[in-house]
Length: 452
Image 1 (tube, rainbow, N blue to C red):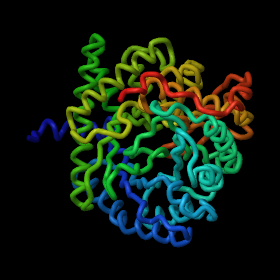
Image 2 (cartoon, rainbow, N blue to C red; image 1 turned 60 degrees about the vertical axis):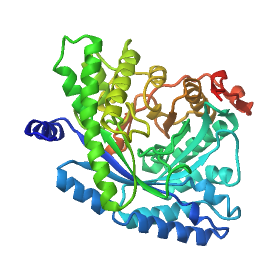
Image 3 (tube, helix red, strand yellow; image 1 turned 90 degrees about the vertical axis):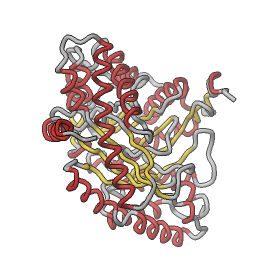
């Protein structure tokens, strides 16, 4: 039952605390678009996406007007394109990327994710061709996003894929160097990727999902920060309770929008991803939430513990608010997209090593981190391997989205603009991991993966 206080509180959250629906994402299966003729397959892909998602943007805008809730992005996720590329081995996968861009333009969406491959246990038909085409595909498109899953708790880590992805990330940065190295900002390397993630750049529509569905990603770091500042003397467990109650309110809004969008679009409601996703806007920062708990600056000792508290409380509050919670659900720590993280990185308080430790307890991983342009492909691969190991051993999703800033050095700033923000070039360890990476093979799954 709604009351006046609840309505006014939500209005205040939207106006003063940067509360928003970060995205409504339509997941679309393209399995029925598979064809040995790549041109015919592309035609089917375009027709299906533009048919299913033709009303997505309009519906999102209508819901914004109905409820007064900002919906920042309207997005589409699709079946990993490597599966379609497998049926046409003589075709150029970039044709699919260009088709996806054309479909995104027609539908008017902000991003379209799914130029992806799942190679955690090895390469199958279509995988290698798609992976090698990623730099060109991201260079020739503006709204298409890509992801590759290189490991899982059940299968271990495909180190051959890890090696290749280091090369792909670096090449993607080089061929978009004239555009602020934007290529790798649209590329995520996963361990334990989930099939119902509505957030970019890692979204794809898993094969276990229905033909079409709608997901919602909510965001409210500013709301959580505001809530905890009202309790300056609260104990840690009392603080956790405050965050849980706040996450409940945020998720209820996502549930409302998701149910409404599902009804208006005539497709099943998938999930609410209740992640705290920051933006460069003042007051919309996960780092500032952690600092609100009592840390002088994000990255200092105690940051990992504070993030663990935040992530757990967000999940516990969210699952009480919706029976459709899924995706990643927790706290994101993308450096370039979070003003508090940017400030901490510039000050030297937040380092790559500390970020890696934080990823053991957050939702995803090393996200939107700018590194020197002279970084080697092997070092990128090693960073991916480290992060995948955290995900594999802890049975959680981890990811890497590194941006080598070609021609730039430590301390300089790479400017993206918009939601991607700006990032300081962070220092890296320059000792070579090349011999380790060149070994190839697969890191075996951990013992606790044997659960059957």
